[in-house]
Length: 500
Image 1 (cartoon, rainbow, N blue to C red):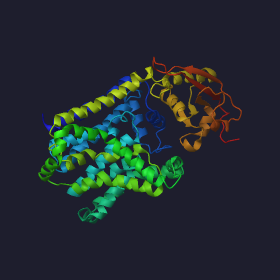
Image 2: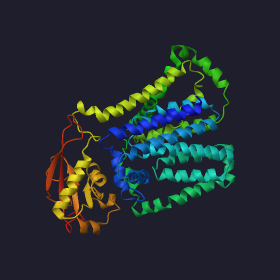
Image 3: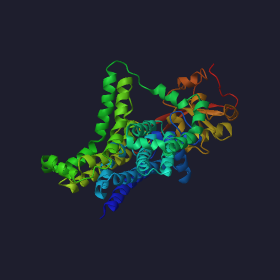
Image 4: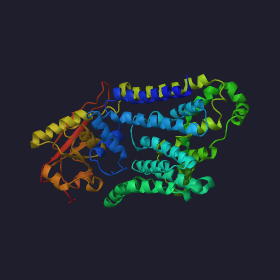
């Protein structure tokens, strides 16, 4: 079998299984997917937490699948597949052989972010092909200087910024590389880089206008969720925590290499590696090292200087070059005495994580006596509340207010897909037409056995108590406790617009 065919079979089968297993076994989608569907239903240029691309793609998948939620799992698999394709292409451009490119894909595939988190399609997952694609296009643009590569780089950068602002880190790394190294800096005398910047800026104009119109909503939300340092120790511990998490993320590749080395390979590794490295052309080592490590260094320095704690999952797209770097600088697979053992280890790791995903959906409820999002009765809740609203008011439910988890499921499953008035707060729900809500009424929803709604609703409706409640069983024959859903019907004309 050729290396390209092996890469296609391995990468394709892994992606297929990570889409197929949750499609067949998950009774309810993960939080980020439910949230994305709620945002996407509104088709805005931005949302409370993120730019709009993840929500747009989820909404597209909803229509392509005839109103089902499993499209999110296939979007994640597609992101991984595109990432593998770009890793293969970049590996070959950097002078690696076909089998080295295969191992770059195999090692990348067992990093943690490409396994267990994959079914939860979110902006972190969507950044995987964005980062890999931008690095690939930048390499092509530097080597060939074609204006089409620069235009494509600018367009993909804009796509990335519509996904998550974290892509600014990669854009900064690209800009700094261009300034630092003479062979890249010479392109500044051509139209290419400026064309890329112009394309990116032009495509971002609609989102920038939305940001200005909403008083920088996503930035304000990010600021409200930041974790400032509590002491000087945080300037040391927070970057170390982030670094430790990223090292742990690479436990899979480490085990695969160790399996391929065996005790024999460990003893002779230094000599074998030296011979293998000498036989390789050192194409693009500077480029590879820069984009494999500079973004990580910037995050660590930023955390050390500010003392802020960075979310570990933000590292998801930062390590798309880990497999290539391991192959290049560990001289793989030439330094592995037992490559078949290494491949078996990679397959075993994938099987373990796929088994965990299956177990979470099918087996976990039999021993976990705790409510889980995966088994939440979202569809039953939505159908019941929509029917209650229609019975009480004679009209279809058009607006629902509540916390993200409670309200977003109704937006996803209820007939007509009512709009989510998130937290009954116009500031974080800029798509809401208050006059239309006033004309059509509103249902407030919350979970738990509480007669009064949460405080953010009580400030609008002092003294309010629930109009009704119902207990719903989770979607499993296991012992997960039931959930109590409460509702408050605000008829047309009585919807509050300002706190009393």
